[in-house]
Image (cartoon, rainbow, N blue to C red; front, side):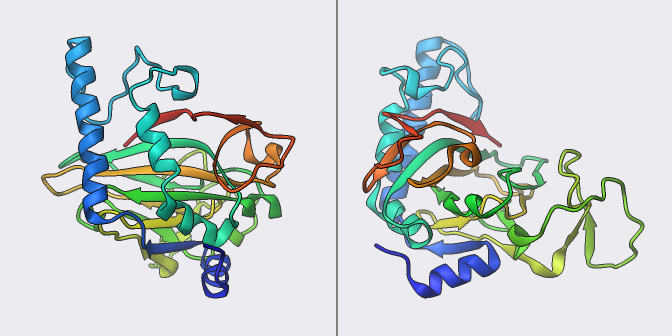
Amino acid sequence: MTSTNGDAARYAEQGFLTRLPGLSATEAKGFLDQLLAIEAEQERLHRRRFALGRQWRERGFRPHERADHPLREWLGTMARHPAIGDAVARVLGEDLLVRNADIVIRPARSLFGSAWHRDTAQTGPGVDRMVTAWVALTPATRMNGCMRFIAGSHRRPPARRTGFSLDPRPRLRQLIDPELREDAWIDLEHEAWNELDAGQISLHHMRTLHGSGTNWTGSPRVALVLRFLADDVDPSVAGCGEAMLVRGRHRNRNIALREAVTMQWSP
């Protein structure tokens, strides 16, 4: 699937696309069940209890370095899934690489969220050749801590301000993340909620400000997040010189191909 003018224009304007078709509900449940089964088997083998979302330290969570890594095949199948590639091709075209992946889990009744942040500190047009794809394996709702985006924030230039503001405007919120100094305040007038059904996909620009909230429900919120690169990306912007080809052709001599990519658990 190639980019459509409507999708590309909307993505360029707001910095994200949401509720894109992806996996069927049955497929999403199948991938989730496989993930939980793999985790349960690792708990049995290592004879210690792993809370959902904790990494298996013995394995280092580096599938590209271990051919026997228990998640290597699972990750490769998902990263190469045609429906996920179709969604990403809407904004990056047909030649796609994956840089890394995160298994993102917000446990049931967790009391924490993710602070407002960006996925890269890089700026400039080269960043447009990267995108973060969120693949929902369970529904993502306001009640279980779905992501929120600030529309248009990917085009906001870095500010010089590093301190706190006394701006009294009621629709602005102070930034939580102490490392993100370029946006000390966030305009909630442009906030969008990323509610997804299981199997649906969202895409966001790596410069788009986003965060997520508390999971008030009795079930975990689970997703796979894939960082996609267009094959023509500048490796200095991408922050890596290696990636996995998942769709199309590879012609970028500045990026070496891996058979798998590294991943980590995220809350």
